[in-house]
Image 1 (cartoon, rainbow, N blue to C red):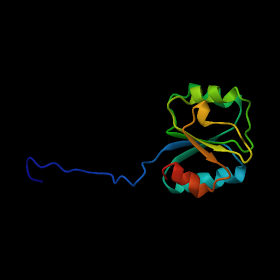
Image 2 (image 1 turned 120 degrees about the vertical axis):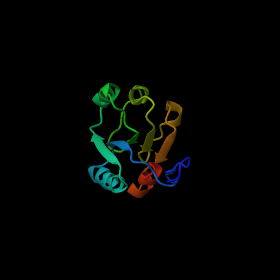
Image 3 (image 1 turned 90 degrees about the vertical axis):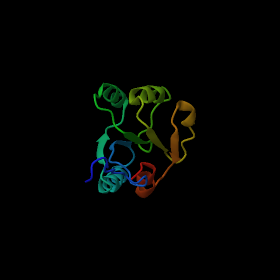
Length: 130
């Protein structure tokens, strides 16, 4: 390489960088299909048991996730759970998939990305940037 010339390495904007993603809720088969789709895209995927202890666990993590996907199907929570969850998640973006018939206004609770389920794994993987 000639002196004074720098090599530039650029990542195309359409390529998603690998993310650490946490999946919560939904059905076992839906979670497994989504995990497979995200793993295939190069992401590192974990699943958590839903419930109040999820919030405490999230709040204590030293290394945050890059993204949380929370499917309320099979993981219904009382109204006071959501502000606590939002706080425990910190700055981590959350994609919330509202179960069919769930009329709660999640956008008003601080969730920027709310999808109405059911969602195909490919749709969620696309929303996650896979």
